Image (cartoon, rainbow, N blue to C red; front, side):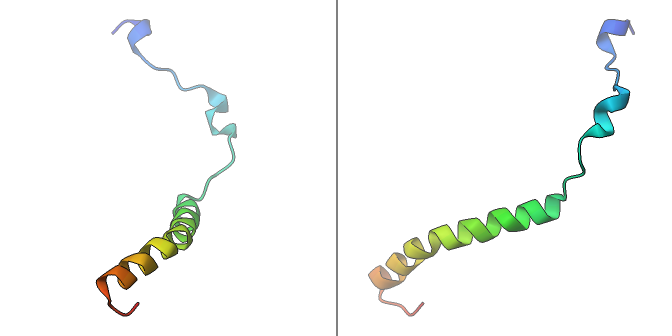
Length: 51
C-alpha cells in the first residue's frame, strides 16, 4: 500500500474528552419523550382511549 492510502491516527486523537454515549442517549430520549407528550395526548383523545 502506498502511504496515501493508509490512514495514520495522530497521537492527539485521544485528547478529546471521554463522552458517555449511554448518558447522551438517555438524555436525548428523555427530551424526545417530553416533547412528544402533546402528540400522544392528542392521539389518545382522537382515538377516545385512556392515556
